[in-house]
Image 1 (tube, one colour):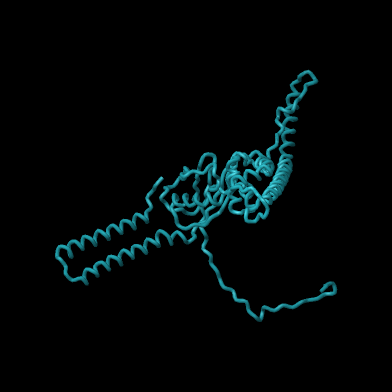
Image 2 (cartoon, rainbow, N blue to C red):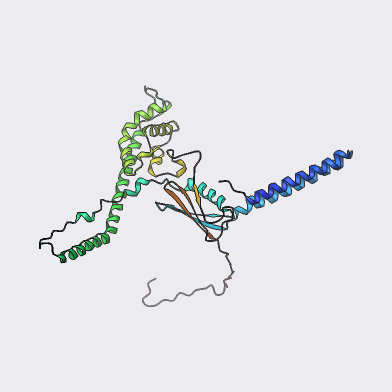
Length: 343
């Protein structure tokens, strides 16, 4: 979605006009008139260089320095998981601000895992789970009583849902910590069996990093599988990728914690090898012209499949600071003691 960057176009236009004018003047005044004074030719070239340097400094101010000074605070919220970050940026157009936000998104936001959305959702009781029996022969008044009973039961379940959610989150965090501890223990035990040949004094069978990874991986395969299952990360990793990562850690003498670090957290978006693409397609949704500069209370959205980023812009306020000097004579204190004061 390329759009015209006004300041860049202005700078390029000035460079083109200046270069064309100087070469035209050079062709007419020097080439046709066959100027023989070398000093005048050099002075002509010096004037052109000075003019180009002046435009270069203007370009630095308009294209770089102008954008470095923080002017706005931009709050980014990701849907559907609700992760958010806040950034400061200078005067940018809406399109360039969107590109800058995506650059920050890929290095600051964790990978969105849709499987985590249903982790803490229990099998809720359905309305059809309540059965009512008419023992009085199906009178009309029983229908109203049945409806009231159904709504009362639903209201009670709704009131107790926050307690259920709290205990489910506590139980899930406990299970994750338990699986993490088992994985760390298994990885540390497996890494203790790996030594370089220079450190081994007795007879040993030499192995390359890939063979060493295949030899020690079975001892930690089950704890790793259980941990990836409880954190819903098993679709992102295959056995080949895990073995390759383990071989890389072994070849570079990394510790066990360095190996499991990749799986402890969801990781940032850019490090997700499964969804990595050379070109990422996003849709920018905004009711303003994209070449306009961002302003206070601007809101725009970035979408990619099920993920959307809502960006809200706020202008930094002007800070008015006043100086207040403390009088040294008034900066003294007295300790008052009473009969009930203990010092």
